[in-house]
Image 1 (cartoon, helix red, strand yellow):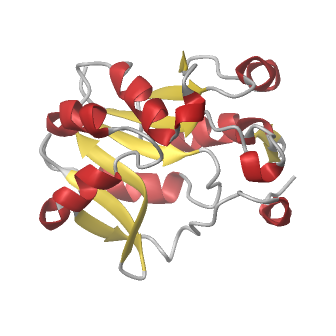
Image 2 (cartoon, rainbow, N blue to C red; image 1 turned 135 degrees about the horizontal axis):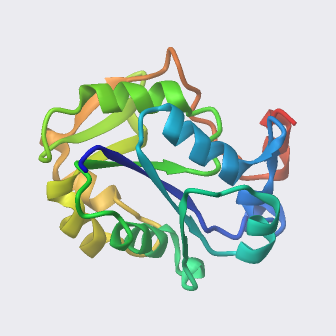
Length: 195
């Protein structure tokens, strides 16, 4: 089938948010996890894998994830790396590339995803959004990198080690004009959501 698959990491427990799972927070009338999955599709991903962990049942009860592959990461407390590894393990083998996004970055949406998808040329691609020249999210990994991506995903580092090791190969695509890479991490950040 080929094409692009979106991977939305949404398993964290929101420790700095008082233990509220971020995927269930409401943005533009929908839970963040539903919003993020829809943005991946709007940005050009044919299929979407969503990794849930903390309060997965409560998030699933709120969100419409019909048509998405939902992966439960029981080891979510070990950090983002375990969620990334679980998500990569669920990727369809026939896809050309995966676009990885984070549920707590609603300011990074379909436009940035589409820009990375449009820049894709081969399964060897490593492409990251950048903001004023600084690497950020989302990140596109061509299929060639999936085994290495899964093998290096541990703790809170996620793909950081791979991207640092392959720095010379990572193509940066400026997205500051179409996206705002803020995180929803603390109660003060909740005001940045658009209910």
